[in-house]
Amino acid sequence: MVVVLLRRRGSTWPLLFAGLALVVGLGFQDRVRPAVVLLALALAATIWGVGHGRHREREFRLQVAGMIGFAALAVGGLLASPDLARLLVAAGWIGHGVWDYWHLARDRVVARSFAEWCGALDVVVGASLIIVPLL
Image (tube, rainbow, N blue to C red; front, top):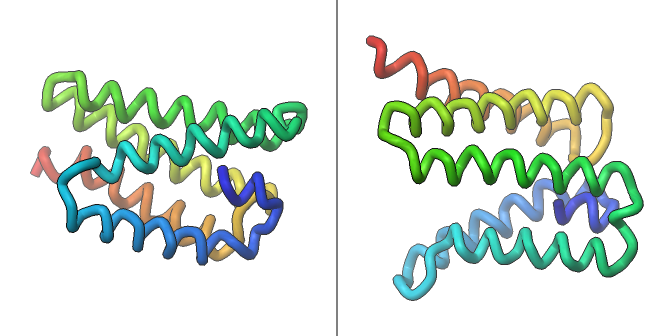
């Protein structure tokens, strides 16, 4: 979402590393969960985008739709039984991998190297959530 707002695909990797540093840093405290901070940042980015007229842009609307869809799968995973939760989370990972490859095919939004890496990682993690319990 932030990469879309910045309109700078080159910011993809630095933003990933900043996000990872944020999550690791938040792990050293127990007042607020990292997921809450990431959700607040996503909400703030969305509000900022709408406030600056970005909601008129197709790419921004697609990112918001994706964010809502993947968040719905994550929340569903939190609320569901363990077996269903595993499948919902797997669907989210695999779906995000497809999402990354779609960005790669369109050569838009994020750095191509990031879309390749993230897409592969997402599909492997999602598939392992389905396959490993069956072994």
